[in-house]
Image (cartoon, rainbow, N blue to C red):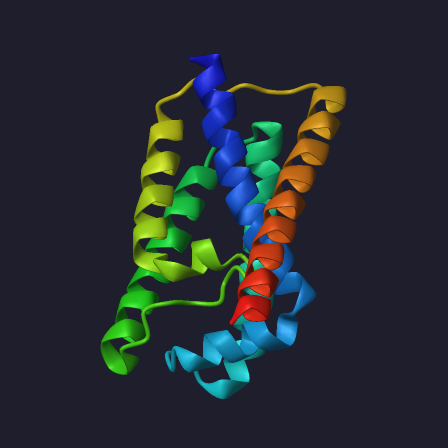
Length: 167
């Protein structure tokens, strides 16, 4: 069960870290993405973007360090709100993708399915034992999560550049 706990926590951390790093690196595009949903007044888009980034930071940290009490509900709530907003946007604009993950196109393609899978993973993690890590183990996990996230981004960017060069 502990291995399953580490696996689900790692997957959730990687996905949220990837999303967080893309949004933080290109905040302007993230604000534009939020405004395309047309759910908030323009003056609140900036505040909403920072709130999402801060919340995703807390989620990544809590899953990395095993400090999950109470944060799972926030994670599920956030994914649920994102799913509803994406569904409304899809219904109003017929746009089926999002740009939440920047250059990682595979995670942008099916946002509703991705969020449902993430909600399922978070709910599964709720029933797994909570494991607390030492500082050294936590640092190792942080480095592993960063390395895997950046590797995914590099591979995704490389594939996109190859397809542009071919066509």
